[in-house]
Amino acid sequence: MMRRLLEGVPLRGLVGLLALLAALLAVPWLANDYLLTVLIIILYFAYTGV
Image (tube, rainbow, N blue to C red; front, side, top):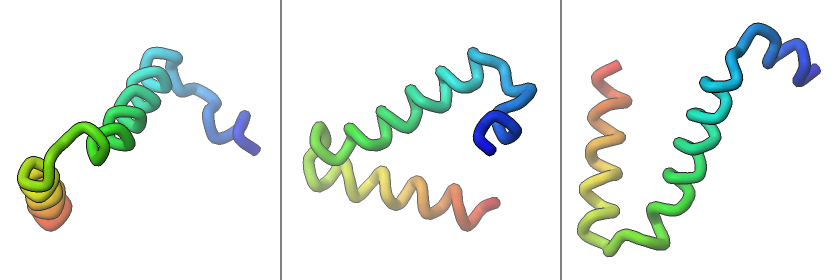
């Protein structure tokens, strides 16, 4: 099933997506509370803007 889902997706896109996911998962451990709050607000406004 994953093979069909990933069919036609370039390797560069998959690597970029995995890097973005790793960065988003690492942010809570690397950022202080203020920066984390600002990032949450930015992501919230980006979501509502879409």
